[in-house]
Length: 422
Length: 192
Image 1 (cartoon, one colour):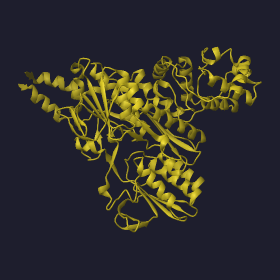
Image 2 (cartoon, chains in turn brown, red; image 1 turned 90 degrees about the vertical axis):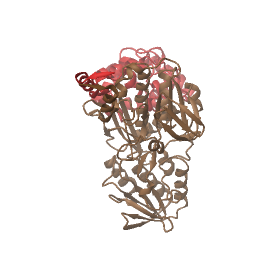
Image 3 (cartoon, rainbow over the protein chains, first blue to last red; image 1 turned 60 degrees about the vertical axis):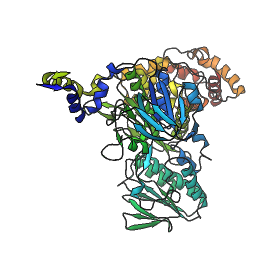
Image 4 (cartoon, chains in turn blue, brown; image 1 turned 45 degrees about the horizontal axis):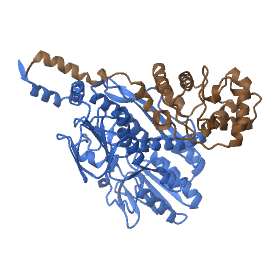
């Protein structure tokens, strides 16, 4: 029995082998040097690093980085501004000029409007860009449709650092002493698993120092604290006893902006003077437009070694938008994933064998002005499961609150932002 | 083009094994680039409490990682992260960082302490930390040009006993005062 080749390929395309087919053929599809193009969408923790490392590893590849803003503000550490440790967001703001000049990256400040996977092109407000490989690193978008009446101008999310963070800080400053802050945490997975609990600590610190008699009510949609539970509870008890009212399994489904109340599961009402709603999340907008989102309708399935989409050939998704197995949705993960993706795009373009991924995550959270805790992990690929898994022993949290970790955390943010911007 | 079923089955089985099976184990660069989020691109640290790994002695790097892994050297995150790597991988990373060009940082130092530190260095340190700390011997690290904060943290750990010293080092530093330690930190940090 014989079969047409295209039918054979179709058969494969329908099965689990689809994602690997393009890669398995990679050695034979390497392009001649010159004219090879990578386009990167998103100038955050993932995109900047992917662009930079591709250029460092092979300067004959043309790299274009498309970002809608002329700067980027780090979400990690932005809670410290809410707490008053940082006077403003300037130390968390990076520009792209040095990065572009040092590595010969073409920066394009534009809004991406579409991706044509078949034509290998990206449409933007500043024209069309063709690519051989595309890296999409768009961060998150909010599922605001799941919270009836949600208005970020009244109840800020502050989960993308910038004007939203400033708005929340101003609301805290304007609040009368003895007031109530409400913080709503969505069901996991969301960007930065320990982030909401660090924010709780930082807001509590601010209230303790500036707004006597105030308190914070934390409405967590999750059945329990998602990350570093023991350490957060210890820190809250030590520094903010009686100030934090933590309530698990409380999912906010509706808000009343006029009366400043939130509704849990449409029934229970909670009133606040300042209300910080962190809405449930999904992959960045462009990932949905481009058809990169998996059957869950939220996140992008990828090959664990190349971060190539399992849905669209030659498009890679890194950072918060991707389903990266055991790696959490953190800035450090995005940085690490970008390097794995860059390494294997360069290998593939040069007809070399792929390299197994090795990734790291290190996430610090502040409990007070001087104490921080961390979670770490080293990640690899489980060949049988074809998934990213932690290396035994490497995943763990700090044994206790630590002043030294706060010092290291400050250098972490300095290093990682320097790496992104130079 | 026509393909026979038997050939197709063979091709299919090869493809289903997936790319992972065909990939090389993580290269030294793949392993080491993951460290840069904290230690800077190619190990050139921009953060004052984080050591630069660029140009570091291979022997020292391996020794440090093994001591982090076993818990012998005090650590925060490194005690956990070091457990994520095999001995072979640690050697590969040591090799990668040893080959990187050291980058001088611009840490602020006190010139009076630098001068005092030079005297302390000449008396107590220079037999192992060669060439003003720019060269190494056996398992001593290159300490010249590291950030002042990093050096101070390490010296505190030696002084408190949290970080164990070799017998030789313990003997040499016995006469040093707190001010001497601080001065040597300034001296090393001032070296380019």
